[in-house]
Every structure is written in structure tokens, then in C-alpha cells.
Image 1 (cartoon, rainbow, N blue to C red):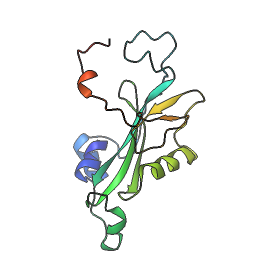
Image 2 (tube, rainbow, N blue to C red):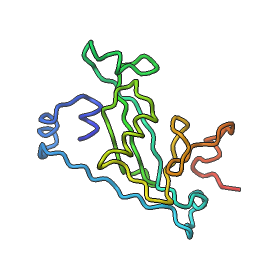
Image 3 (spheres, rainbow, N blue to C red):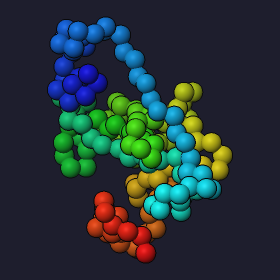
Length: 160
């Protein structure tokens, strides 16, 4: 239902009718569990304290003429910036939608962690994110200058 509203610009009352559900919004998000010291997963055991990963995506929107410049992203599309946080099992933990497409990743993240009910990162834990963010105690970005190859981490590969 959520994706129908976002992806197809469907009104809540239409979704309510199509899915035969209440018009009220409920969001059930997973609770993050950090990688523990005794983790037996060959891929995760190296990342003690990791809660999951976060990134942003752009969703196309139609903005009022006077607001189009704010919603235009670096590729020239009129979008909103949506930040999503997932746990290690790819379940959503936190989603923030609504920032204009021109907003920088770091600006959106700063808003998320300073909100009253924003993303909380327990001491000693962290989330993975891409180089659009700053490396810090709570957010771990890839080491600059190293090329990471997806083929090395795909399904069916082993760690040497």
C-alpha cells in the first residue's frame, strides 16, 4: 500500500478502497540488532556493532512552478529525497520522505539524527552508508581510494 501511494501517486482513499483496508496509516518497522561478538555468519562477523545500512533515493514528483528549482536534483530531475535505513535482513528500520531533491545527503542525515523521534544510534553501534555521508562514530563509509567489487560479495562466493 505504501509503495502504491509513493510510486504511483495514488491517493490514500483509492488505496483504502483497492486494498479493502482502513485509511489510517500504520508503520511497523523492524528493530535493529547489532552484530554480536559471537556471530557465526562469515560475512557479518567482521562488523561487530553494525546495525544495518542507510542510503537515500530520489522519487520523481511534480512540483509547483515556484518550487521546481528546490526539487531539482543534480541530474536535473524534479524529485524528493527519501532516506531509508535497513537492518541486516533488509527490513526497514526508519524512513524519512519529503526533503527536496536538491538537498545533500549529509543535510538530510543531520535532520534525521536531530529530530525528536529521529534515528537513534546506540553507543558503540553504527550503520554502513556510502561516500555521500561523512565517516563518523555512528556511520561507517567505504575507505576512499579502494575499489570494492560486487562480484567478490555476491551470492555463492566464499570469503578467503
